[in-house]
Amino acid sequence: MIRRISLSFIIGVCALSAGAEYSDSYYSRMNGKRREELKSAAKECVVSHKMLEYYELPTYWAYSDVYPEPVDGCRRWWDMYSDEIYLIRPGESGRSSFSRNKMQREHAVPKSWWKKAGSVEYTPAYSDMWNLYPSDGTANQAKLNYPFGMTSSPTFDNGVTKVGGAMRGYGGGSPNVFEPADRYKGDFARAIFYMATVYDDINWVYHYMFDAEAYPTLTSWAVSMLLQWARQDPVSQKEIDRNNYVEQYQGNRNPFVDFPELAEYIWGSRTTETFYVADQANSDPTPPITGDPEITAPVNGEALDFGQAAVGHAVARALQISGHNLTSSLSVRVSGTDKNSFIPETTVIPHSTMNASGGYLLNILYRPTAVGSHQARLILYDGGIDGSIAVDLRGEALPVPEMATLRALAPEDISDGGYTARWEAPSGIADYYTLHRVRYVDGNEEAESYETGDTSFRITDRNPDVAESYTVTYNRLGIDSPESNTIYVAANGIRQIDAAAPLRIFVVEGGLRIVRGEGESGELTITDASGLLYYSSADALDGTFISLSPGIYIARTAADAPRLLIVK
Image (cartoon, rainbow, N blue to C red; front, side):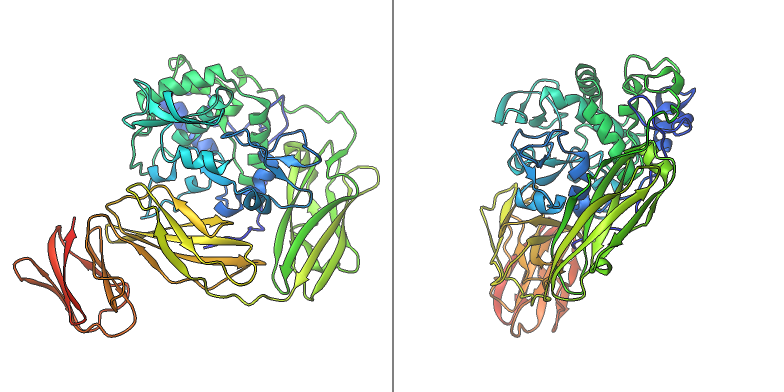
């Protein structure tokens, strides 16, 4: 399912300090704690946060994960997986740039390592900004679901990401590992420390680096390597800035960025010592306001382009507002002939919020009611600043498009580890496609969705013992098309009733699944090899799941020859 921008906004409670930004009380529960008690207290401090929408992460990354220096007047994505130059064009949204550059959302700790409520999506870890980063597509596909580690025999090396055979003592049993560049090893180590702290109760199904224990949660080899990475690559300004942005958007911080020695107190060389916030670097109280009120972004005359939208439908854009030393609330107003087409989420930004976090991400909706081009002006004023700052708002409204139903095609390049899902393009324009994937595991359906600008998508985490299926939709001007036909990918080595038959049966974990086609199939019977009847139906419904114990079964219908089915 395509998820939309939420107009609710979590305002982080923090205060400006030297380097890090947090209030005196934010980490107070950690005072006087050691080792596992300190780890538990750190979790209590930061576990509560807003669960962001996975598909909207590029909206936030367009500010938290870009280089501070522009390239040819454009922001550049800060990709810790490659040195490829991916730019955000003036007026382009984070999601639009992400799609155009064919970048991907990459989990530092792979989502396939956990499951909860039958799906990897049903936990905040799925979209936690401390576990996801913008990535080059090629590097992401090479990384797959391998653990972090050291490799001396890389099969993939783009100068930033290495993937290859694990050196002795690394990998936790995985034959291959992902090794980031030296300058990012500390960044990833502190991200994993956060994950092991906040999600120590998650249902880990792969234990390369994580154990299902509240302490230490990380395996011994992983602790040793990550501590070494954190020591060799200390906290950078990039991480400090990102920590402040993440708090604005998600509502929590990474304590391992705020306190570089915290990991040593929990897992490393200082586990016998007691932790006190006041003893740590960056723990000075909030300094008084000493400078003049100032808005540093946006600049006067800047433009925010909403692109195209369908009449009666909304398009959201985010405007980063940064400033310091405000003495009163900052006011927001929209003026101009088309002002009713542009709707900011709020008209007042508290000065305490601006001064504490150094900024605010203002969400604005463009909701046109008539075809044509629309313009308005957003005005920022008050707060003690001299004069005002104006931002031009632009958008183009088009008629609501007619959405066709796509035709999904059979997959190509099927292997034990993956396959390429394919589909036909519509006759009109598609802004992007969404591949909807379902895996049939233990009688449950695990659903995931992937967004792409191409008419194909490579699945890289296939389990050859699990049957799955996919459908496709496309989006134009914020409107989703009807879902395509369903393509089924059977488990390897298992015969199934022919796809051309009016009734098909697929082997899934724990039994069989029935899929209806066109035409009459007659009565369906399922027996074991001895002839014992397990199932019979004259009109089996589409999607019916038949629970069976492992064994060999025979399916018979009037429209097809008997087929052998092996349930594992």
